[in-house]
Image (cartoon, rainbow, N blue to C red):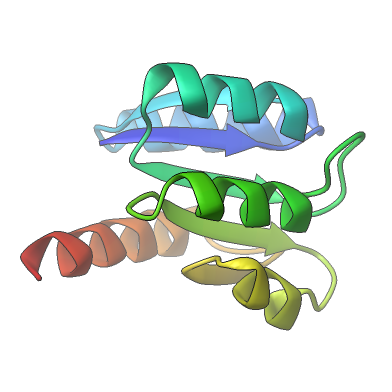
Amino acid sequence: MRILIVDDDPVVSRLLKDFLTLKGFYVQTSDNGSEALELIKREGFQVLVTDYDMPGLNGIELTGIVRSLCQDLLIVGMSADSKEPDFLKAGADLFIQKPFSLFKLSELISNLFLKNHAE
């Protein structure tokens, strides 16, 4: 499974990338929404995990644009703030509030992916 992590905090990005890579996923990172959008158009990911607060496009704006371009891409929004309704309205499949367990994130992604590909 190909995952794109978008977060402007390099520590968070690296932590998520390292953990999800150890769980067997192919993971790339981006520190802003505009670059992430270009990567999605060019590289074909199956899952997007995006933070809310970033320079340029925020995570909700990125979610809305990506959802209009890629109906099959699984989108997970994440934020320390209560942004769940905004992410879901923009087209996210799932929201996870920071801080969260890395194991929980991995499990949620796997379950969501399996559910969507079983249909």
